[in-house]
Length: 375
Figure 1 (cartoon, rainbow, N blue to C red):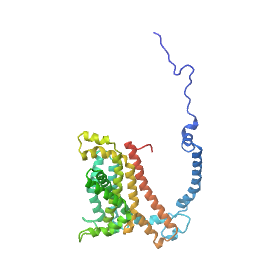
Figure 2: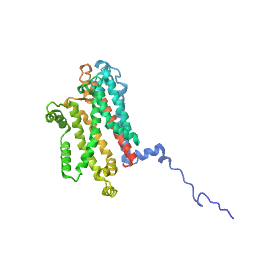
Figure 3: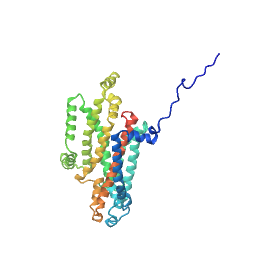
Figure 4: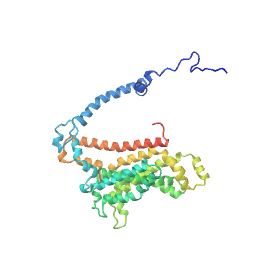
């Protein structure tokens, strides 16, 4: 029996050559992403030029010529061409805690650590761990956090008018986010309800809150809300702001979620009905998971807007993070012209870190759920 030998290449064929050096590695990446056309090449060169012009002075101002240690404006004015980070370090406690007593700030730190752990369980946990995280975050944790922050049960009482800084910003933002999502889901479902009374009530609620600026809402919560309460019943300023922010954000959240519900094909509703599922079962198991997945960018965008809108609580006398920074710049002890710029740059960096973090998590969640297009 004869044996046949095969050649790796057909007669006259040549082996594949390696790709040209200009298409792989760093050179290939540069050609593909930065110099793929004449227009892109011009933009790349212009961007490099702008960076060369802007970055060195920025580094000089923020790092090399900056005053890192300062006790007053005199230390900042020793080098007037640089930032005064000593002001930030000197006032850091006020920026983070407002007027919360120094001896009791461990309670704020404890609540912060517990919040991070629970949010980590909710956002990154799997299966039962995520479920336990959601259950704890919605049920016992708010009560425990309030007791720790406000006091009582053996702890020194710290009135809410002493709360401030980043602590207050996070309290308002986390409460608003936590309350607005379920309220938004209910409002979105109500607006699509077949029952006219429920549908009309939800439409009126959503359109009213979306048609009024948040500043007006805060004024109403602060001034008019107590007029509707029974005599002798009084809500403090912070609680009024929390209610106003949560309801305002819920109206926007409802429209975002309604868009996701309308994007679900009619066949999904028919399939749920064919399986014998009731309204709430089909919504919980089939419709809402798909709708919420579709509108992840819109939900996170609403959360980011809510986080930044917390700065408006200043108008009703609450000192949030930005207000604390601004108040610090008014101190005569720090009346140097370099201080306000340094303070606002610091505030911008802090807000950017929080907002960028939420944005990146949104992109990561979209990729994990395989719902988004290529980022």
